Amino acid sequence: MKRIAVLTGGGDAPGLNAVIRAVTKTAINIYGCDVFGVLDGYDGFIAPNGILPLDLAAVRGILPRGGTILGTANRGNPFARKVMRDGQQVVIDVSDEVIKAIQELHLDAVIVIGGDGTLRVAMELCEKGVPVIGVPKTIDNDVGGTEVTFGFDTALMIATEALDRLHTTAEAHHRVMVLELMGRDAGFIALHSGVAGGADVILIPEIPFRYEAIFRKVRERAEGGAKFSLMAVSEGAKPVGGQEVFSRSGDAVYVPRLGGIGQEVGKYIESQGLEARVTVLGHLQRGGSPTAFDRWLATRYGAAAVRTAAQGGFGRMVALRDAKVIDIPISEALAVPKRVNLKGDAITTARGIGISFGDE
Image (cartoon, rainbow, N blue to C red; front, side):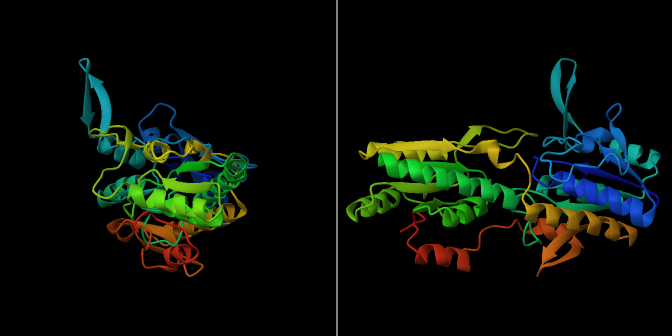
């Protein structure tokens, strides 16, 4: 193994730079490799000046930085790329161009850091002969095959701090405070931060809710002497028999953008005669310096990815299981999306301390 490349795809997450740093330093220090960074996801393979040589100096000082020094693209699927042809927007397959560029660079391995969408592209490229190693990344923690993805812990800390701050103003003004959080179709951020931040109601995609049940919890608190309530609402939560709320529709390339369920919950509370305020935390959950845990996990993932590549473990993804970093087939990670276990101790614990999920 003499030449490897690393890229970051999909939404940004705290810890990406820690992976890039670990990949670069391990590949150089242990294997004597030439390392290249691919700019803006897979796009860098076919864009002018899209490949950046990485040495030890290039990754110096980036460990505590959020974002990614390589840039990213959450719409950079080479199998479905939007381009303009004769004034019309069309979707084309440029995967062969990407593969040709990889071959011309004489790369022995391509380390792909991303969530399920980026890793699915990696698997498809691997099926066409590209020597790919995957590293799971997403603040949503919804990649299968691993206990946790880096970026989740930082997003969780930010969400919990937001709930702490909303708690004080909710108590001061006797209001219902609704915090809408990211997570797509998985409720991990809302569930974990809701428990840690003392939420009274947690709404997650895995448990359809009833508006009446939400208000019942608020009313019970009021009757018990509590003059405020705190709600953690996942962006993918939906009422029983209803649909998710989107702020933007999707198409052949772009997935629909979730957002707005927090406002719907706030409107309902106010329609019942109580004062409510809604906060959408949004991209604040993605930004800033990664926590110590995310730096630690990302560094372990990056180093393990290089070791896996050196052993010829292509088409595999590094993962955390039982406190150990292992590697599994990317196909296994993508087979079943990870969701909150409704029979697990997290849900049982939340219900036991009186948290409502709006379903009873």
